[in-house]
Length: 211
Image 1 (cartoon, rainbow, N blue to C red):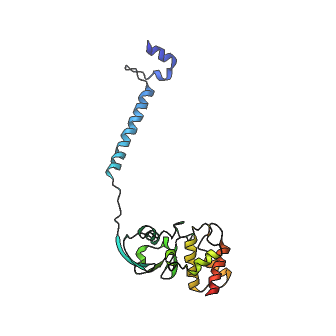
Image 2 (image 1 turned 45 degrees about the horizontal axis):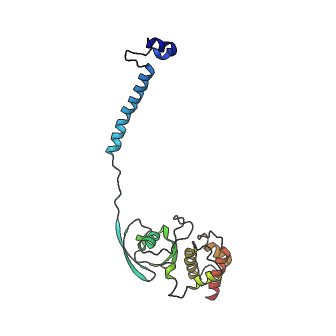
Image 3 (image 1 turned 135 degrees about the horizontal axis):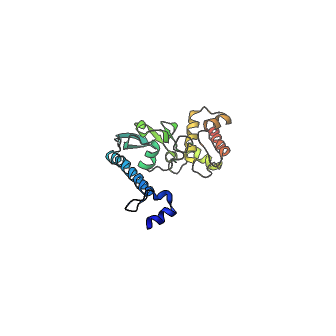
């Protein structure tokens, strides 16, 4: 009686009604789900069997002078100088900006040459002399570039300032930038988010004139 009622209401599904009362659509649906389940078993089994390879970490011993103080570090060979300064030596004056060598916020002096510390591996600095913003002042006496930055209001928000000052110190030591255009070009790797470029230029020229 129930089968007859179903045939009247759903004729296309009634052809599959068996003795147990299930329809062809229900049977195919169950078969499809079962197929997915069966197909997934090997995938899960493979995923479970595979292990993710972990690269071995090479630990190195590096000795370098940082702000006049000898430092001996045992480091991961992949550690950048920026992270070594901030995380190993707690010299957080050097800022992490873009971390891709494009903004100059992490500029420090390595053997008196300005470099982006985010692009330099610490392992490459064995035996080097590193100067960060913390190492420019002599006690209570600020470096002339630091004083000039204050005088000309070149600090602005301050985030890029350590890199700007280290880069300016390196530029003055290089002695090549003589004109405003030279200075701007030579400092172009240091991005100031406040746009205080004229103030920074004035500060650098001030120190150059005093030298």
